[in-house]
Length: 302
Image (cartoon, rainbow, N blue to C red; front, side):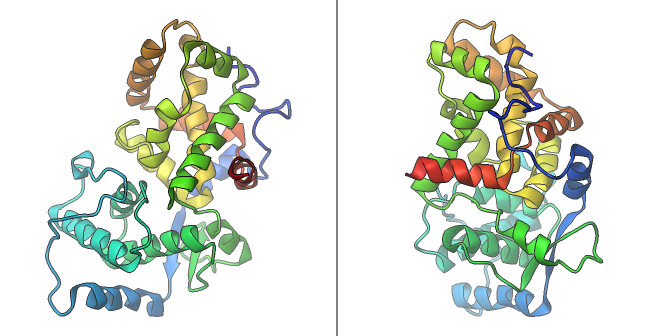
């Protein structure tokens, strides 16, 4: 394609290589789930008591935004009971972490988790991810099992959990955006140069993709597949998916001569991208690793 350096990343200037081939990565994403100890599950009831006391509301009316978008209308499959739970959980996280006011991914992260987890499980997983992201410490009582319920969640699984960082500060949001811009420069140099000529910054479209986990940008069925991969690999999955969207439409985007046209057409093409298998196959080929992403973010922080 016209992107130069494209999805195969073979010239050493693009994304790092990963040990997992695309087929294995796909299988991993499809079989990821959390294993929570009984003791950890009780923390949900304890947190409810701390926040609400003896009278738990059915639904909370005033919700924190965390600098993100709470759009339950984007999730037609969620029942009223699930949305009630989502409102309570958002208030609980806000009360338990008053120091964190910017977690733009949290509303969509929570609503996506509630597609497969009950409210207690979703709270524990969400609180864990927020805690790991804010402190860098791993909760030994929560492991990520790969490949089915029989997994014991060993050292490799716990290592993966360390990569499940979400944005919890303005600085983290800025470095994530700058790291993606650098990935575009390395992996799609022709497109990067074209964007520069049109005065289009990667942040003009990618900030919304990353902060909302592609909700409202990609079809929801595709978002769910990307989300499964995100639970397995962390933020590197989001960056690889964003690169794949650009790669799939690169040749056409290179023909556009106006920055507004570029952004509008990219938005429309992304919303129509309903082939999740093709998107993930393209994303896997970029071989974005957690170590590369952390390296880029560390460089941007300096």
